[in-house]
Length: 122
Image (cartoon, rainbow, N blue to C red):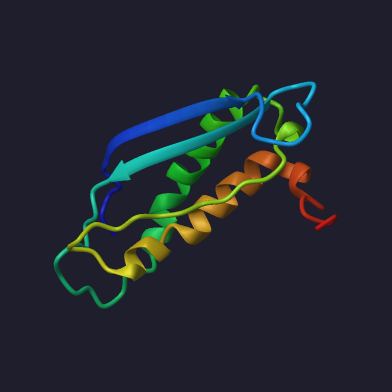
C-alpha cells in the first residue's frame, strides 16, 4: 500500500475553568491531536483500500502518545476520548473510515488498563 505522507500535525490542549454549574476545584483539560495526510485514493477508484489501515497504525499510536504527553503524561487521568476523520472533496466516506481502527486502537494501547470501565457509570 502507499506510504502515509503527513502534511501537518497539531496537538493542542485547552484548560476549561468554568462552563456552567459549580466551578470545579481543578480546571478540566481537553486535548486534541490532529494530522493532515495526503489521500492516495482521492479522485480515483481503488478496489481494495483496507490494508491502508495497517499503514495508519503507527500514526495512530504516535498521535495517541503525543496527546497523552500533552495532557500531562498520565494515562489514568484521561476521562474519555474519541476520534474522527474529514475527507476532502475528491475523497470518499470509506477513506475516512480507514481511520477507525488505527485511531481507536492507538489510543487504547497508550491508555492500557486506564480505559477499562471508562464509561461504566453511563
